[in-house]
Amino acid sequence: MAASLASRAEDRGTSQTIRAQLALREMLMAGEIKPGERLSELAIVEKIGVSRTPVRAALMTLAEEGLLDAIPSGGYAARGFTEREVLDAIEVRGTLEGLAARLAAERGAGTIALQSMRESLLRLDDAVTAIAEGRDAFEAYIEHNAAFHRAIARMADNAALDRQMERAIALPFASPNAFVKTQGETPETRRVLLVAQEQHRSVFEAIERREGSRAEALMREHSRVAARNFAQTVRSRAALDRVPGGALIRLASE
Amino acid sequence: MAASLASRAEDRGTSQTIRAQLALREMLMAGEIKPGERLSELAIVEKIGVSRTPVRAALMTLAEEGLLDAIPSGGYAARGFTEREVLDAIEVRGTLEGLAARLAAERGAGTIALQSMRESLLRLDDAVTAIAEGRDAFEAYIEHNAAFHRAIARMADNAALDRQMERAIALPFASPNAFVKTQGETPETRRVLLVAQEQHRSVFEAIERREGSRAEALMREHSRVAARNFAQTVRSRAALDRVPGGALIRLASE
DNA sequence: TGAATTCCTTATGTATACATATCTGTGCCG
DNA sequence: CGGCACAGATATGTATACATAAGGAATTCA
Image: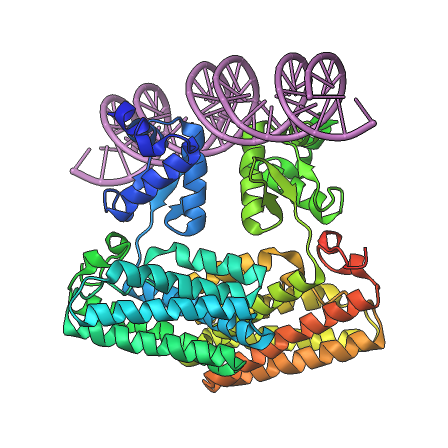
């Protein structure tokens, strides 16, 4: 019932708008709302148990994030993404991260920032080693991978870039962590993680040495690992539901 | 009065939300609302003559565009930009346009797209020539310059990139046309426009020949013309009010 | 039988009333 | 005299009623 949804313990304390946002995003991610489907405000109101006003605010935000399409005649529809669109989004993210890495290198990162980056790097090493040994350290990898990428953005110290990157990552399959779980715990996964970690190390070295152009090129190439992994996942029709936001992706053959 | 504002002929036919957006954006650009100033919904309602609902929607949109800051405790404040932030925004725009140019080149632009780009180029030639001869062709230059830049974005054929570029250009001083009027009709202006036009020509050539890396580098460099011009304008304290959104910029010395 | 038009249903856009949190000013206490 | 606390005022957050336009179904006409 609506009442039970609206009164969940985790929801108390947050605004109705945020609640609506989270609920809608979750429903989209879970495939509960299918791409192309129109979202009726009234239907959402009944499902989530908040009034139309915060629902409308949430719809605006999600449309802004790119998860919804605004219909010209009014209202919104769930957006679907082709493989091509996903790869395009990853390319944009990679380019922005490349700029961030270059700026971090050129502007010269402070000792503290470099130190925290080195920290993330070491913990990523641990995670990769653990996974290579068969232990489940994916959560740790995801956490520190995100921290590593965020550290670079912070070091770039460019507000406009921050905003743009935040938006690029809003598409779940375009985030730096999107590829991590695509392939399950296969030997292939370990190889990919090792390569990615090697790229992390190189990026760090480039930034530390203030080699801006190298840092940028490396970061771009790093994002292409994600692109390649995604493309392989799609082509093998495997584990698409493991990709964040996989429910939003419609394959060409379907 | 509110009524007179609300019933202006140009406003009829558009939604109240759009009306509020336009009115607010104009007030911000004109410096009628100063950076840092908090925007009270009720005050806006009285000024524009629409109810709070569309005003709130407009505020959300403008905050999303980067013109307003969301205050943590609620509400919004007009945002101010330092010289550094402006240059940072231009760098991001240039990077995205660089990506667009590279993609346009690599993916191979269709004949029709190239043709319309060549068209813009020729008309820009006319405008530059006219300005060099002392005639006022700035409006024409701005129009065709925008068309030229838009053509590249279109040729890149990347939806995610389109969205990001649109957002980058939302900051008025970061648009490709921002620098055009910064210096008035001085000999210096003519020189700058000639250089910029030469870059346009080179970018076109690179895209036509599918030289992606060159197209990207050229496009980035092209944006640096804007950056340099802006920096000079600021340093000479001259004509800052001629820069689009100049009212949003607060100089370090002030 | 097909197409077009009209009416009805239902959606979103807008205005406004109500709830609640924040800020400010004043008064009291230390 | 300074700072804290409380109360009032005013802001935003939310809910809902109303206006209007879009969409669909049914009926009628060609």
